[in-house]
Image (cartoon, rainbow, N blue to C red; front, side, top):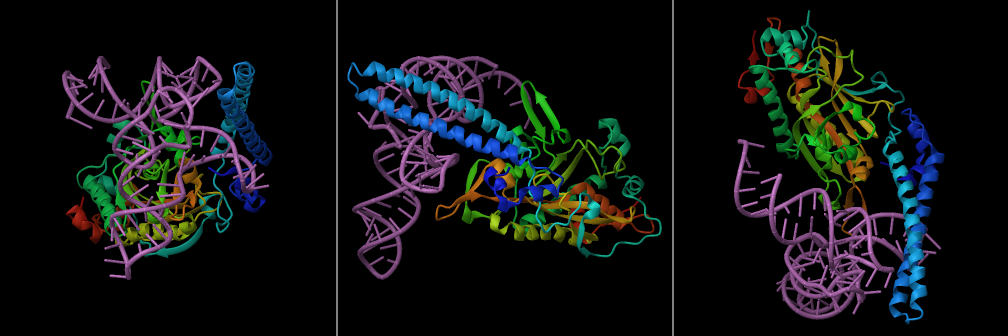
Length: 421
RNA sequence: GGAAGCGUGGCAGAGCGGCCGAAUGCACUCGCCUUGAAAGCGAGAGUCCCGAAAGGGUCCGGGGGUUCGAAUCCCUCCGCUUCCGCCA
């Protein structure tokens, strides 16, 4: 959420920046709501000050002065009620409007609105060239570790069932990621709820605009949402808190299932594990000093890349176009892994700097030793999604004889170094 | 789900309907003292909002009510604790 004052400051250049992501800011409306709200607060405060004066006067008043003062106090009270009502209305309208304005994309991002407009930053590893590469579905079924038919029987399309060494591989990947991030990269592991409140979803920006992307539950009169990523609970751990500036940066990780409705992606990636309603992911979240957020993003991407490299998976890093980044983001790198079956790089991790946008929504404040107060900056990135990594491990590790070699770093976790049909 | 009790500042813990933004202790910040530290002494310090500032307003779990005036009285919701039931 933006500070309306900052948004309206010409130096912010908000209209131009938002236009880059195709959002048209209604400056006139924002100005009207913001100044109207402030005026209503002023009016209410003045009335309350008057009421406070009258109360003191009543206490010291003589018996004949008293009735007139009490009468006046009652009138003032009525005025307070009016001013407060005005304030409440404008506050609500302003709040609603602010909640739907996306974050300002950084100027360094390239123009454009799709992944085709992303800018390649670097590549790592050599894309495997195979005669007739199988895709992960064919591989998985031949190896007997993937059962999509039964997944459909259980839950419908866009679910997966892993069996035997497939399930073990999934478990191994998650443990491998968590161990690396906690032991080498300084992250604290958390176990968090995957059902969260509307307020929590609003804190990170999934709500109110993207309710159609979420799974919603309702039991009795209680409403909860299934998280689309651990970013939601991890970032909101510190909602409505004030953090001491010197304890930053905070680095958190968690493995959770992630639930996405995938509304609006009907024809896309219908095969296999790429796009599911439910998948497991290890997420990285950093809560940092806003002045350092971009440097922290480089650090975060580095942590995701480190596990990719240890698995020996060829990938590239791209800088997303201004019109392609998420609602709450101001700067995003995607890591794309090489998929031999598609002959292309596909997104495996998205690492974003949100500036203070989420912290304002969730109210994650900071206080320095000298008493200076502000909002923290938040960042997050996948580190990594288990399913898509499994896809890459299968596809990049496939051998001419139909077997799949397990990356060396993973063997201590799987207990086997090859998958054979 | 049933019964009882409790929700005050970072923590602990006071608080006759106006003198309470709130005693006191601990913790904290800054001085003094000390070679340094502790102790001791002195001073200070809460949050959020409006305001260029001066200043004003707000906040004693949330919401509502009584009253000129509520941390203090009433209603309601939420949370916590203990006992019973149920359950992994």
